[in-house]
Image (tube, rainbow, N blue to C red; front, side, top):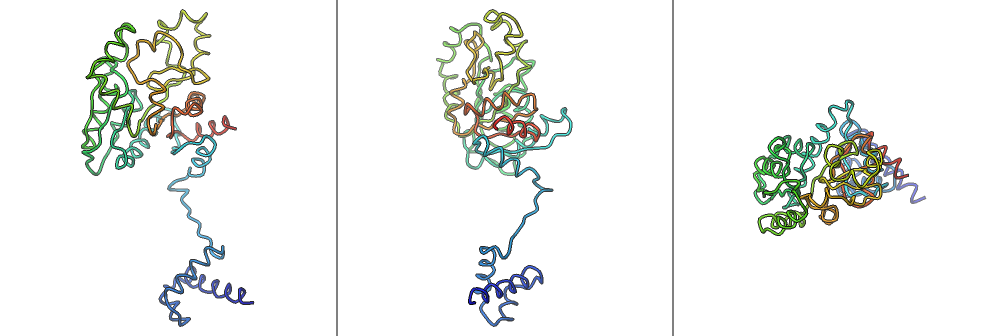
Length: 316
């Protein structure tokens, strides 16, 4: 009987507070008890399930449930999903979300490693920072692509982010691909290159894109073709890339001369960075992204809604 009476009182107070919009002080005067007692009763009503607070954030953040489901399905640290109605806007929408995410992460991450490529360039070009972060340093994880593509090489992206955030940056004075494995070994041993790669390996956060299968022929045909009977076999062997490291369906870096000449952190070095955030979308890249997650190359993901749903189905 005592519990019944107490619950009736909790219900009455909850109605006055939530439905009638009375203040706790007004309710306290009505029942001639202290305001702190009313506060405790309101809290208790919520704990007992008499009152349920539902936050309708669908309009502001409509994909929270999808993000949580993807995090749980693939054991990711963080997930952000954006809706993209037109494929032409995919990179723009993803990079916009990534720019905001990066700005939020900067207060707790002092060394940020950046990959090259169009997506990371868009992140940098759209980056806005309300406060200067003069204790943050941006570090490239790969060499340059030549004058034609200088704007989307990792060093240029780091420079742009440093200027926009008030931070610092390092440059990697090396091409993306060198002429021989011997040249690569020689360059990596040079202090001015070793220092940059060592800094990147020990970064607090890395931001990378994930390439799909369709972009490799013009890049690596000359390096890989002799190892495969046909271009079809070559296509079947390749699943994706992270910072130009090309991997197969098992997530293994493909054994070929391309990697012997590549000036970039390799997959295992990237994997060891404290948190690797991948910004990638498009259902056609789902296998590439899924393999990268399954092999623990990335920890967090910014993607589009349709790709997120596809990844969940692959996980199942």
